[in-house]
Amino acid sequence: MRSLFILILSFIISTSFAQNIDEVQEVKTDSITTVPDSLYREDQFYASISYVVMQNKPNGYEQNSVSTGLTMGFLRDMPINEKRTYAIAVGLGYAYYNIKNDLKVTESAGTVFYEQADAADFDKNKQVLHYLELPIELRWRNSSETSHKFWRVYTGFKISYLFADKAQYYPLSGGSTKVKGNSDLNSLVYGAYISAGWNTWNLYAYYGITPIYKNQAKLSDGENINLNTVSLGLVFYIL
Image (cartoon, rainbow, N blue to C red; front, side, top):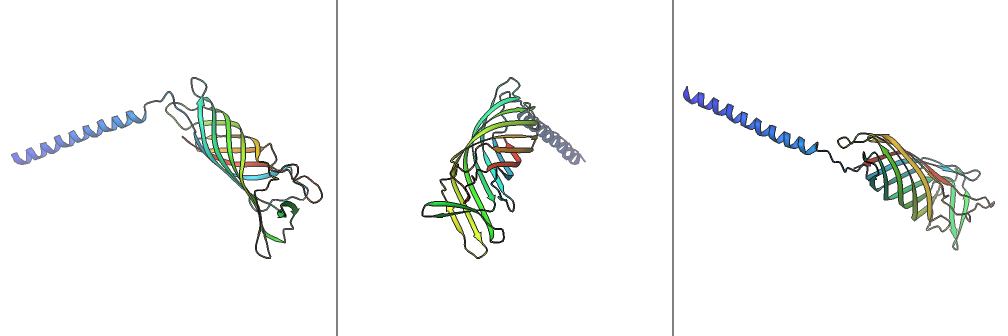
């Protein structure tokens, strides 16, 4: 009986001791995760996916299938008020556009030609653009030191440098024609954008102020091609 009593007493003491250790560890863990950071920064990495709609189109120009845009990059968040609800952000990013349309681009003897292809003659026709981007934006959010779920409205302007491009036409008869490094494309384009939302889900819109083609790019009838990009989609932020 004495042995049983000692065994039970030992079990109770060891259990109580273990619970005390767990509680101490839990308090320490909580104290680490809930310590407010008065110098916090928000949303320094971003990625977006969007549907691309072309504006200022030449007569007869049509998009086919779904044209997509992707961006990703880093923005240095720099709060400008004591509550850190306003900030300026400057960064570096990458943008990819896959514009599916009926504008056939070909090259002969170093000269690039443009014509509107009949939809019955080709399987796919696309213009792919790769940009290095320098965004700068003004930010408002109602975040706090202890919560990263908040409303935000960010608006900005960015300069995009074209470092790679490809126009590819796939006729139904087979094979394909490809034009890379087209000098008729503007190497620098400017645009404005805005994003707004709550927590993870944020709407995103971008308008390209500069046309993607230079004035020298014309259809066979002399009409300028121009084409400005408008992107509508979602942007996601990561601390």
